[in-house]
Image (tube, rainbow, N blue to C red; front, top):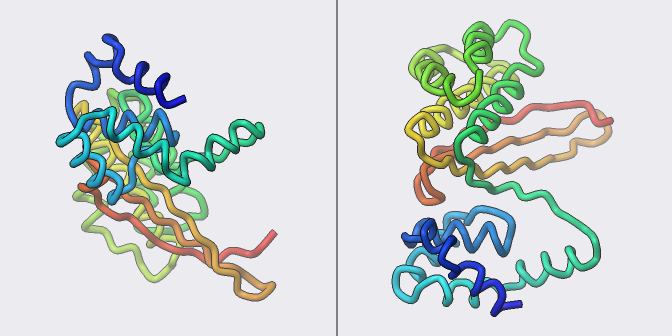
Length: 216
């Protein structure tokens, strides 16, 4: 329970890594909630760790409804995928590749098609991140056109370039992935994709778009 979590987060091996309030904040969220902190949680617990230390934030999060809900789900054998994460090293390359793959789905003659295809060829692990990041200005200058799919593709490509830039600096990349659906009768539905990508939960850029798709 609480004592075990505190002992784990305070053991000498963990202490060598958790030597700063920002690292402690990410750690307690990932350890207890299996996700990175959202912007408000980041601000609250970063301040708490600075003022009172990781013990205080551990206790506080373990009292939260989200933690109790997750614990109940684990005990019941259920899991729920996290949509907020902090990614390091090779993980950043995977996130960039996923964004580029999403950008290429459904594209026909978008203005950014050729650029996205070039970026995908550069996506060869962490070593390819600087080359992908270098396409940011070119993508920004291109017109996406009137197609919703093309507009979304441009946003996803920009998000991939931004994540690649942060990762190329050997810095963890914070990603908040939000997707919502608005049903429009039985003919189609609108899927809205939003990604907040940045250095920390409090320092992100938003990349968003929406497309209409036929329901399955």
